[in-house]
Image 1 (tube, helix red, strand yellow):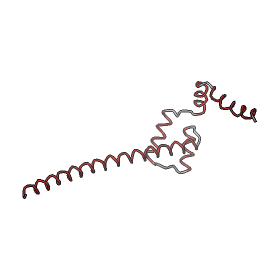
Image 2: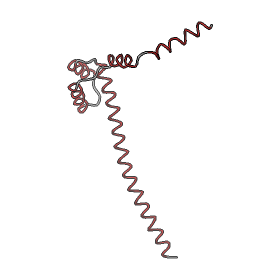
Image 3: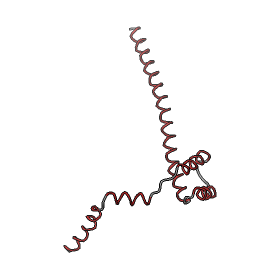
Image 4: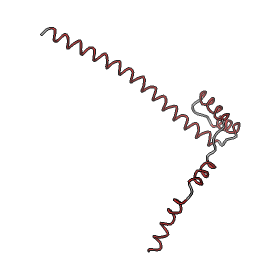
Length: 120
């Protein structure tokens, strides 16, 4: 039982001993950055259509030298960022409208209080 416990603890220790640079290099090898040309083409396509049909995705993947899955994931992430930005803009608009209504309410309440005290 003690030997098994010892072996179970060895694996996490070995992982912790992995050099941070090795870890970062391994991740960089797996995750290739898109070129500025690829990003520009993806952004331009996104401005035209937020969701790709399969044919357009395949053509874009072929033209840019990427996997169709990379295109799909990029569009999914870009839609999420776009939706977040839309929500932020809506929030800002609603907040401005709320603030204006709140100021108007405060002004009206002050007028009512003034009128109440004027008749006493």
